Length: 231
Image (tube, rainbow, N blue to C red; front, side, top):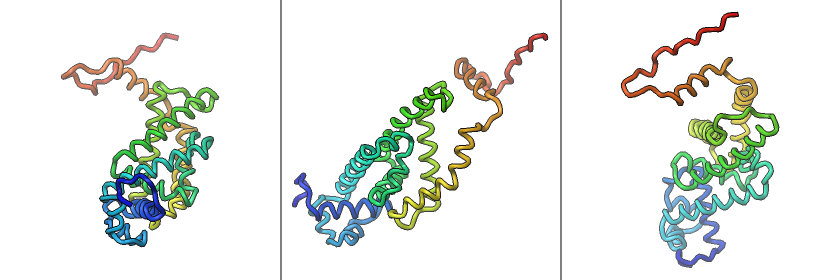
């Protein structure tokens, strides 16, 4: 079957699935020859089905994004409650998708942007619900906070996997559970108890946003103290 034929075949699917797993394990610089060996076919057959490595990469992108959407649909409650990473990592079927996503986050590209947007959209929902239920404090900018929470969590995970990559993408579930065991306590503690003992830094920054220094004016000038009221 030519690469222009939209129909799928078991061989084509096997090559694509092997490519997803190999890209997750080794990154997007891996060769067509390696992918072909993983799929048990010749490099020529890979090119016959997909036309080029770039075209194979694009089809892998589409397959991974479709898998994420389907996983969210099947696990709607958990996926939209801030647990999309866990949902993907806990299943042997989906762990390679998460490995592929993490590689995409490191490399940039459409899959990375789409995955982050999925998580940001979900975070906006569950943080607003948490505020409405009295579980979380309201934010000056709820959307900005949701995006920060997603980027900070994904950034921490991405760095951890970069420094200590799993030997096998299929073991990413165990890797993620280790990550949670090491990082969830300080994360939850910071969320529950806070880090700063007052909101002075926030108030100073909000004041700066409303009245930023003019050009040429130093932005580290000491703040004017407000006289305390007499008792």
